Amino acid sequence: MKINEIFYSLQGEGHYTGTPAVFVRFAGCNLRCWFCDTNFETGLEMSEDEIVSKVLKYPTRYVVITGGEPTLQLSASLCDKLHAHGRYLMMETNGTRPLPEGCLVDWITCSPKLSNIVKEKRELVPLSIGHIDELKVVFEDSESQDIALYEEIPASEYRLQPCDMQDPQRNQEIIDKTINYILQHPQWKLSLQTHKILGVR
Image 1 (cartoon, rainbow, N blue to C red):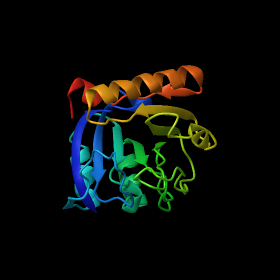
Image 2: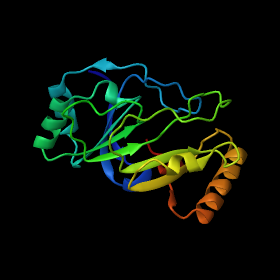
Image 3: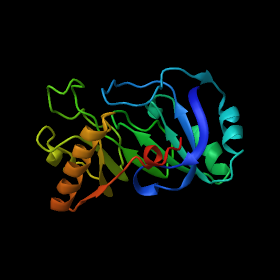
Image 4: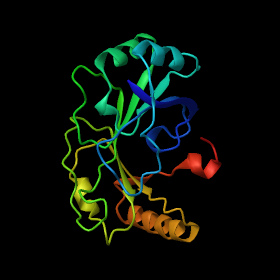
């Protein structure tokens, strides 16, 4: 398995914000989103046992399986080995691929993407993931995004996350629009990238 990095930090986004977790970041992705802030191409080949050994060095039971797109490499045997050590598995996925056969994941966060990353065509990439606990949408504004498209996707929780434009003024505008949208559509909850706000990894 090609692993970009394994590190220990706080979950910065979504339902488990603030929870100490080991992040296992798989290299590689099947999409190229213009707003992606992750360098996921490079990585080190690691065996499943090497991955498990590194995860077990940290005291938390929570493991975030992320990428890139983790469904490109995740295996049932790795999930089983981590569960055997009492780990709770959370996966972050774009939802365009099914969970590999036999993989048991305790919490799935899906962040659907648009079909055209240059933002000219506003259609969702078809989803193949079978179950979603938390749907997380990177929000720009309701004029350029049809949020109602996402509301048709079955999930237990719905969250909007302001898009980071690397521009403080633009970011504040998007945050304000996100909050206003949520106040008008209370089925949504706010997700912030608190690791960036706090300056932690």
